[in-house]
Picture (cartoon, rainbow, N blue to C red):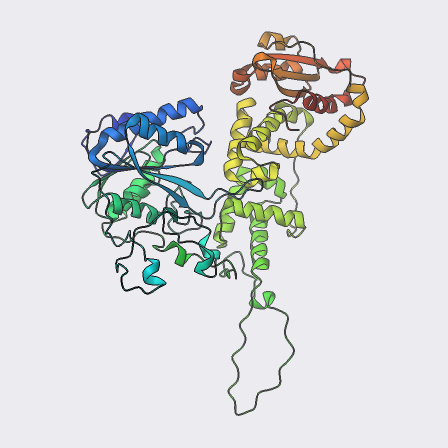
Length: 586
């Protein structure tokens, strides 16, 4: 392969980089998978810590080899592995860190039990700490100084200053500079490319803003230099490089991403303006007073008078000789308008289903999000889902025709509801969320939930797992109450010594209902379940990838050993709390 072919090559980036010439690139920018379970087209973003760090070391070593002696490497990474990758880059590979920049964005996923994430780490590495490209005088990189803007000091450099070290709060919410900090420092504010933004490339969910890449390409490379991206994705790095007169090359694993990103590159030319606002603060709407939504297709019947404030008392008529006063501007109730738009989007997408059914069905969710986007609603899928749930809880969701659903039988739920409970617990532990609504509101959390459920009970649809979790939510409080009520019945009932879990051992329990305990290494309690057919359920645990890797033993209490079959489910709750199992919800 030639050093640079101004194209995106399809394949594993490590293998492709090994075919490239040493010292053939001037600037590398990498936004790799963060190993947080994100749904990519061709990559499983959920490895063990050791595997992920070994893989990261391998591709970063190739970046180091490919850079010229004065080359620069920028790495975008999330919280989970930022420190690890910085240590690997510096101490094991030989990079020097020049800056640790924070990219601050809005439209992140809203959280209720932790502070919402709104940043990504950007590491600025160089190969030689004394000789590297840094275009400090580029006017597109420099920012106005307080000395010039605030104090009018004649000694101020007319070209501005370089961004420096500071803290930042959300800038568009402040009414004056004295309440905030300058967003142009080593905490950089650029809005994330949300689903409604014009620059969004619809085929990729993790798109960097062009203006952010523009700053990096301008400061760390020169015209005709080679810019390389080993994870090309939507092609933003390469599109920015082309617009700024650099040569470029990239790698991408997905056929679909390669095709669409290549088409994107064909539509841009050198000297084209970068997409997105150059001044992210000036362009951000002030949230103190709100913003009026424009008329959109989903709002055909809305009239300004529908949202007008109550009329004030009539004023005295003006003297005849005076010009009539212009009519007062109509005041729009933005909150009401937004709720109406959300409600109409729901009715157009839900096919008569409930909010719970919509959240449980990825297909219906996609239709709902498309309807919200078409209505011109600001935000993204998580924001729209959250508002929909709020409307349901407040009783303000518009009523529509109800669909007749085939009921899910107890026998059907028995096949996969246990996996939904485990997936709920694992998702809650990973992201710090609690309710199943919070999980299904976030597309990221919901997809993680789906993958975990499928690992414990393969072969079912995402909608099956999600509906099973919602059904489990309805019953769990009643079961907990029953477990307390019949504590005297359960007090002396517990599992015998666990035995090894095998398919043969499972077969011996075929057709028998009961409660069971899964144990891990050292007989650590993992999960208590109840099943209509213990043999069938334990066979799933013995063969499913996730259970098989964690589980070593099992113990059972047969339903025939209980005074009544109605005790099976509350006994499971009692034993879950008693053994403090890792994979149960409590």
